[in-house]
Image 1 (tube, one colour):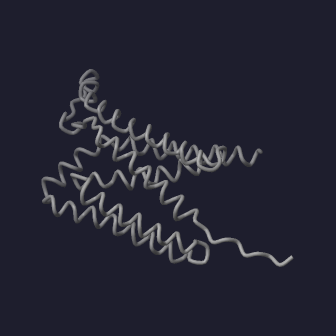
Image 2 (image 1 turned 90 degrees about the horizontal axis):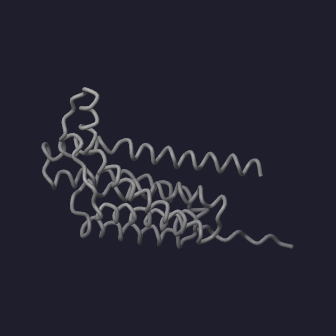
Image 3 (image 1 turned 30 degrees about the vertical axis):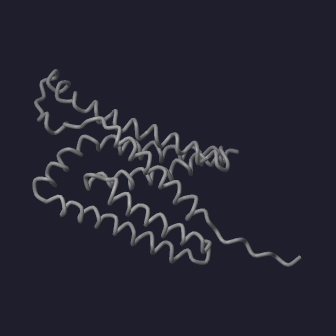
Amino acid sequence: MRGAGRERRAWWLVCAGYVVVLYATLPLGRPVIDWLRGHYSLAQQAWLMNGVFAGVGVLVVVWLISRWRVLSPLAYVYAALLARLLYCEFRFLVVYPEERLHFLEYGVLACLLHRACAIDVRGGWAYAAAMGLGALIGLGDEVVQHLTKYIPDVCAWVGIAVNPATFRRYFGWSDVALNALGVAYGLAFWAGVVKNRRAAPLVPG
């Protein structure tokens, strides 16, 4: 029990730290987006995001190859299917290239949340709990973005001048949906690929 308590604390601390990083970096989003739009065309931005996901994809493929003795053949089918679905999302659902990062950020969060939830909750309930928590964190992401527009006013009260354009972030229900979709993809990858193991060989009696 003591070991389980340490594991529980460790994984929830990892989840909390990841969320803090997500939220703390939100004010940096607008300057980075404005810089990209000022220096690169929409097509070039899309290629940049494609490069990011291609790099992640290479790492996933290397991991899949290294786990061929452990993972079920069906896991590779699921991986290919998820990759194809993600491609369709990028092509038909995502409007701006940077919105693709929602899938990566919240897909990773989903795996961390499930790992933490699975210590105390088993089976499908662990996935449901991770999905609900991930969707709420995604909603909180947009709330924090909305609140960042008040940072220049707060800074002015204490005599610090900042550029309001730096904190020009907005609440968007479409981004809330993308965050939740990223959580769903992460959980689908965890269940269909990571946890899809070969059956243990029978030991002769």
